[in-house]
Length: 409
Image (cartoon, rainbow, N blue to C red; front, side, top):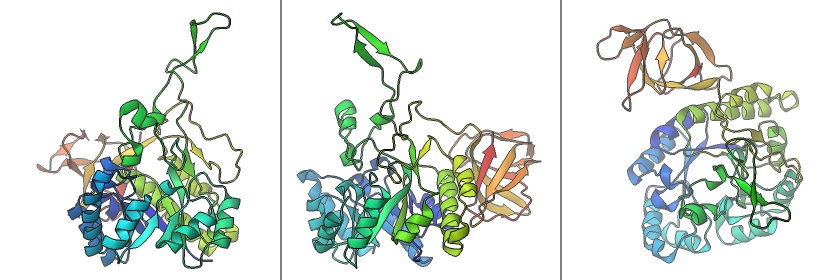
């Protein structure tokens, strides 16, 4: 079996470093206002630094220009394409035919990856893109495994295939949704989705034989989350996915935290390696245990196993994990004390878990002492205030810079 690439999101240079540290083979980034996560903008300098860093450790970076562009966007697209060609990004993700034509002319040395937004759901469509210069297609998330296998068996030999294996699912077909633009004047297809499908809605029906008399349909006192979907999770399906020969397995979430990235990437890294080494003994339960500590919504296999599956709506809205949260990130260790950039309140006696790259089992310990970073005086607790605030603590094992700490609530 061929080992697939593990592809992680990177909403910043620091997030890219976290993804690589915890086992990602490649990351994908936005490009200013030209990708579908304009709030996760990576400026040109950060993108250049990310590419330079990735190449220095044998990893890859893909950049997204996957909006559906109005004509007024094309001058910026040309400049962005030229810049990406110069800094040698490993691939450009696009969906608009006009944008793809620009990439061929202004970024001729860079591989073109067809975004999931292009709705590639057949080998006929996949082969069309290959004939028109694509190196890779990212399939629509609404496909089941039989349809994916059909593409793998009939695609052009030189064409790579990428699928999503974890993360948020859009209400729209392959993410092409107009709901946000309609309700909030923020276009999802131009990278500014307001996530209207995650809002709570109140539904009313007209009372029988009484025109104009509307009665509320209530799920609970909050209303009903009629559009919000669960998050995709295909950790159990990895052996079948790998057996198909999929080239790249993608995690969604450029707006997610470094904690989320470390947890999810580490789980899938260990799972893929385990599956490749002992496919007949693969047991996803220990990886699912880790993923369950980070989920914000329920998890679903969506349509992968069953086109008739209806268990993918999150009618209760967001379900933040009640037991664990982002504790902090190791910055350095000096004279036996680790300097931690804190992300939530920490106090003496807290139970912490260290996410160790390459190990699926976190290291668990309790905080016995805390020291103020500036004065080196003992303190009982610390609350996050300004960005980059840090604290010192003793950790029973030797930690490396970039390791993530999880706090048990």
